[in-house]
Length: 179
Image 1 (cartoon, rainbow, N blue to C red):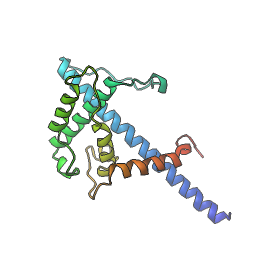
Image 2: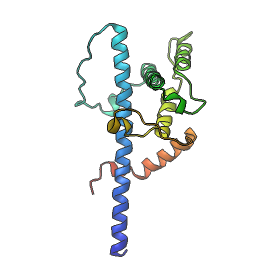
Image 3: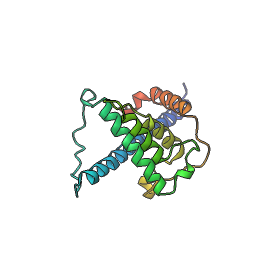
């Protein structure tokens, strides 16, 4: 490989590394956003007047991460809160036509709880993440202080998931690779 080819490859590698880093950071920030919304909602419901300080220093090991119906419920609750926030900001008209309204999500969650002792996820948290990745500027909240809708037709959710999985798999080594 010639020197010019090596420089081009190096520039592409740096751009891909930056893209992977931005994607991962955006997903993490959106997860934190939804977690904050759930915490605020739970504190209001439980009658707490203040939010405790969040300790982000102690990140859990993968084996320590909670799983199960409670986690599914909290993920769906976070999605519900996020959709309600979008509705309040009049952004829901920019979502795909078949995307459920907050009231519909709440009713689905209520139905998932009735007649069973175990909550079964509605899948709305996954669908919201795919829609957010396709329809919103990932850094809009950080740069402009609010959500920014990206115009255009969103991709089918399976297509988005497939493309993101391929992208992340291809670039998995770049997340920790400094060179």
